[in-house]
Amino acid sequence: MSDIAKSSHQEAENGRYANRLFFLLIYLLLGVAFGIVLTRSEVVSWFRIQEMFHFQSFRMYGIIGSAIATAAISVALIKKLQLRSVSGEIITIPRKDLGSGIRYAFGGTIFGLGWALTGACPGPLFALIGSGVPVMIVAVLSALAGTWVYGWLRPRLPH
Amino acid sequence: MMEWIRGEWPWYLAGPLIGLFVPALLIVGNKTFGISSNLRHLCAAIAPGSVAFFRYDWKRTGLWNLVFLVGVLLGGLIAFHGGASHDVVVSAQTKASLVRLGFHDFSGLAPRELFHWQALLTVKGFVSIVVGGFLVGFGTAYAGGCTSGHAISGLANFELPSLIAVLGFFAGGLAATYLILPILLRGV
Image (cartoon, rainbow over all chains, first blue to last red; front, side, top):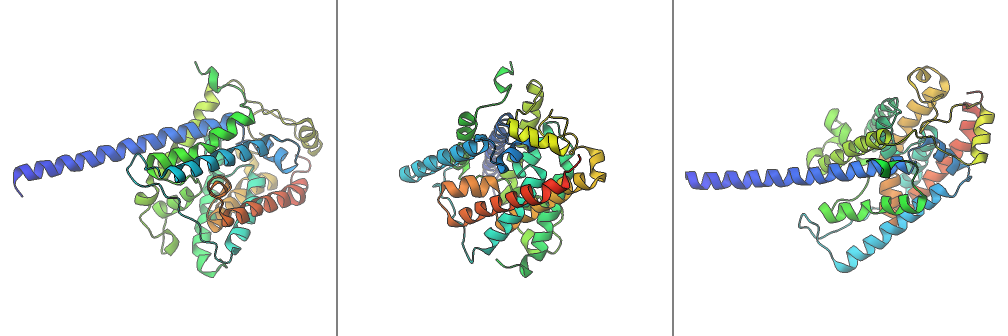
């Protein structure tokens, strides 16, 4: 390879690297925004989860319902307009494989038990570490253990 | 300066804002919104062992999501320290039933009587934090998603697997709320 070809190769490599960093920065900022929304809307709160499962307030249902509606309208628009992402790909949403459905029913129920016990789903578990409940680090480590055990048992579980 | 992130946001603001993360991630990088895959990515990064489920290129598929997750933690930190004292004002009914169980402290996002370091040594603290966390990790991996991936992304795309999963979330949540928690939390 000539020196010129080498340096232009190097430049392209640097460009790709900068591009990747730029996107990671955007994901970081989106994550920060999501953490703020989760915390200020109190969906991270154990008290709110209790209230929800006791059907004593419309609040959580309003939040989840309007989140789904907003996302559904957005997704329909994206599909209709056949938008491309900023990264240049045609936007596609991979569909989940139904299979027998057992994994969704069993896995969903097991997660539901944990959701009510900890009062937090995975996003809030992490947000709570930052928002005054540091002991949730232990819940996160335990969740990692749970995920690991699932991976290990996976070949023996019905799906 | 931080006035806008003070206080509790109404549901009709919070809900649509949460929903907008689905199109935002699709438009930025054709990424599907879902938090719990990060637990799998972390296992793959830290201790894949010889488990096939964790043998994949987590940096290629999951780095963006792990960075998003770091943001979520930072966001919690910013919202917590940027806000005034954050007492959750639950409905009078909920508060009354929690007081009956023995809760006194309603400051903070989670009850301090249950979610602090010493509580890990009590049965109720251990079950709430360690067992609950384990079930969250196991269940979301088994179901292939959590509240974000199934309830929001999945239902917004009208997927039957996600509907089954969400019905499971509530079945499990209600079972724990009505059958386990009243016994577990008695006399906090």
